[in-house]
Length: 162
Image 1 (cartoon, one colour):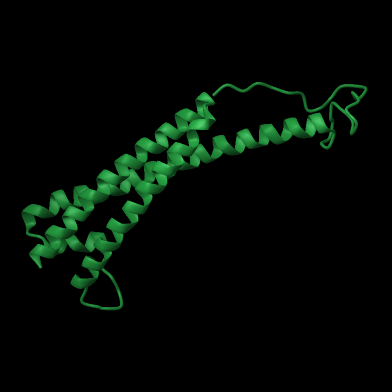
Image 2 (image 1 turned 60 degrees about the vertical axis):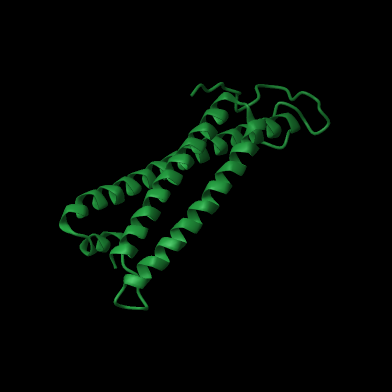
């Protein structure tokens, strides 16, 4: 059992490192979105996918190891349950590692949500501009044949700095 717990600890360390790599990629993605160098987004998306695949493999291996320790073959143990299998001197560092994983996962989710917001705002801006130029939105500046509409065009275009 001690060897299995040691292997689980190693897997958790790998997960922690992969989460760090993922945080770096997502942070770079945010910088690209803010800088406007969108041609570089494809490279970050490919790197993010590669790290996610590796993370999924490591997590699956860890889950299999956890199932081998579970007294109920139908139900896996939780990470918080595993500390009880360790000697008392190792329980604190193990719980700290689990806490770090949880914090990193939350930070990653927050960064992803922020990036999603940036992308949605950019798409809304592009769609608004297209509707304004093509005459398909309310308050369009140009008619269907490119003729400028009379009167003010609403909504007016605004610049937004982040």
